[in-house]
Length: 120
Image (cartoon, rainbow, N blue to C red):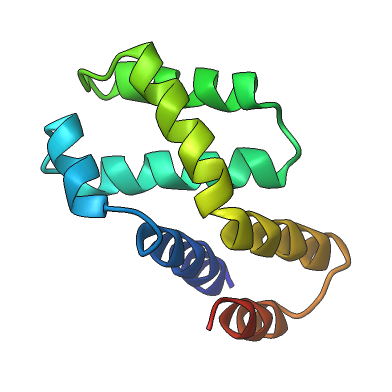
């Protein structure tokens, strides 16, 4: 079951990566580690889907950037979060639906099917 849940979150993250210039983002962060960068994209989706404030999301992204040793200033993080909040609206909504379905104890395969329908 954990594997399918990972597929769900990976599917949502991959969809979001298509909504902005991901390669320019990689260059801006000067990080060759796709896992770190994908983690930042996921934090934005996950935190907004949970109803967190923009300030909270910026703080979480800043913490992750510092923890991973990225040279990314707070102004650029705020701008990125502002832009992606709108660009990722479908993925944020999809993540919100996923949380609700999991809370309602829906079958994990049904959740994955729903995600694929919502994002394709």
